[in-house]
Image (cartoon, rainbow, N blue to C red; front, side):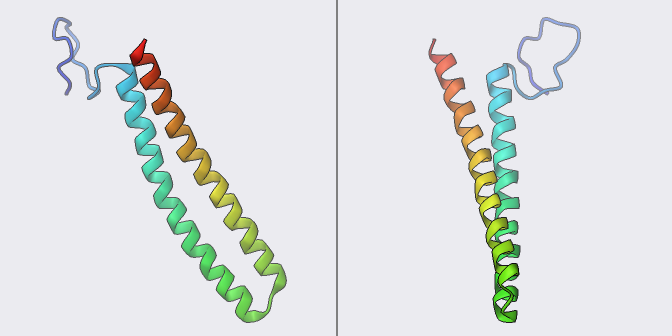
Length: 95
């Protein structure tokens, strides 16, 4: 448990004493989990590429390419949101 300000009667169950620290921890956790899912998705899509190209299935290759780009876009959104949150937190702390 956090010992931020021990003047109250109710102990703080959150390990962070201020909102920016909590927000930074949440965005870091979401980014790390998102990166794990992105790597797994890229590996699965790689197998789909291999399977579709070995079978000569043009539709499967197009589908795998589409999935790959959606994973790249989703990963960029997750990483970008984390970077923007860190920039806003640092800007607010600087004020």
